[in-house]
Length: 235
Image (cartoon, rainbow, N blue to C red; front, top):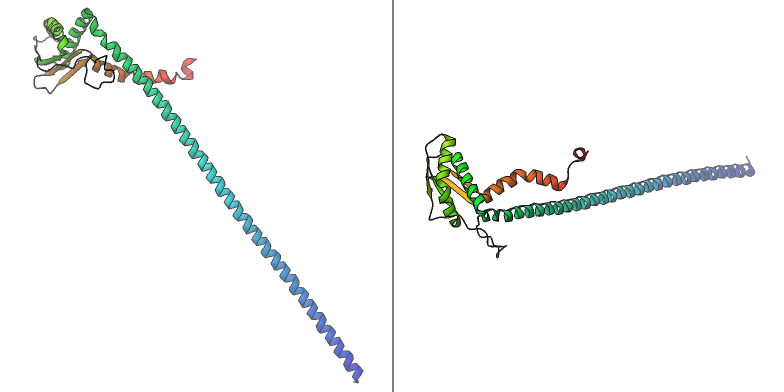
């Protein structure tokens, strides 16, 4: 083999090595680009996922705030409504209490009422001996009806006439002073309180106590009237 042949073989080997190196370099370049694109897509997807998570979290926070604000406003409205309702109920009761003060102005009817209250109290107690308390201003009226009340009770209960002792040391409070409408002093619009001699059984039959009982019993109906009747009942 002469020098020309050797030189030709060397050139072929160089070209082969160069071509193989170029192909290898091209493969590395393509592989690197593919890996870069894959990593870039992964980073993009990760960033998108984080953005979606942040958006969902903030959306939930906004929704929660809206719910809290709505609940707060609803509760505030309910409180205002209930307060207004209670104010009306209190006003109704106060108006009824004022009307009670006029009951004792009609002497004849008030006299009959006191007798009925005494008889009713005796029927509840069913005691042979009781202590009666009234307003100091009503003492004479009570004294004028007490015997008739004892007789009527004895006839109704079919028992002997009871002994009734009028307490002349401790009286029920007087009516409220119209000049002091905001006073919280004890007051009584009329009526009587009867108790057994040992004080263990007490029947409070004052007009104020009767109003409280009647008001508690009628309160559901009053509130229903304030709220309004259901649609089915209006049909």
